[in-house]
Image (cartoon, rainbow, N blue to C red; front, side):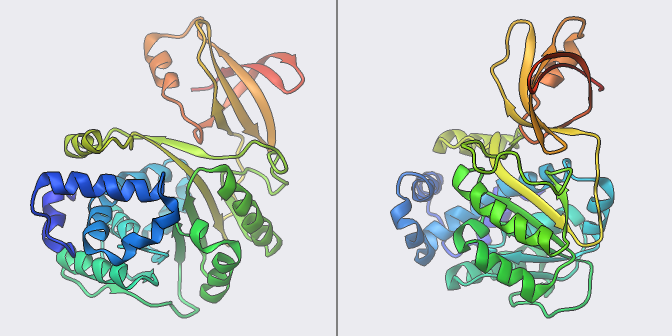
Length: 334
């Protein structure tokens, strides 16, 4: 497991104190929230690029592993031997997350336009792995299996540029792991329409290729990953005031050779829990339902487990009672 001490020697900037690390992470966080008009400024600053790398590498590793739990086993097995193509890679946090997950060497391509980010990625990769398996260029067509990964990059480059990259690379699988925002979801729907028209199969989150029921509404599909980090990262998160236990995202996955159909439904929204029930909005076969899961008869262990369910989790159920149009009382099959 990579720790802060493993990364510090391989950053563009050598921090003078722990407090300087905290202050720099807070500064970079503001660039992504309250000061987005100046968001690109940090790309020219060694200190801020290093702070970004240090914190988000150590939180993106469990984030990458966490999303794999939502994906079908046969798809995940194909990823283990795949060439990883990280588009808009930044300092390579998700490339390293992939490398750590597979625990093996293999070709990793990082596509990045920022000179500082490319320098930081090379410094970090060579420092951690002492290998030449990282390639910082656009791969040629052919070979496989190849997974193309967009980690918080498609939202910055826009749908058309993302689709252009896909056409040029011609991968076997595509993973979009993007911000869980309403604005990006609209862009993701544009990308989804094109990919389905070009005969890509959707692996997650949709169980059919029908139109999204949230299209042209104020609703949007996103997921939450719940993860308790190592004590070291929990301490840093507390110091800088960032909550990385609940990570909101838009996860969309496509494959050329895996057609995935499921009887499971996906939780879209977790509503306020009542004294008697858990309340969710779910998407089942591209239809939305408000559902109620009664607590009566549950043991404490099941109740605790169900209380941790987040948007994005899969459930299997049977209908207990119809409560009206698009509203059901259900029993979970655990």
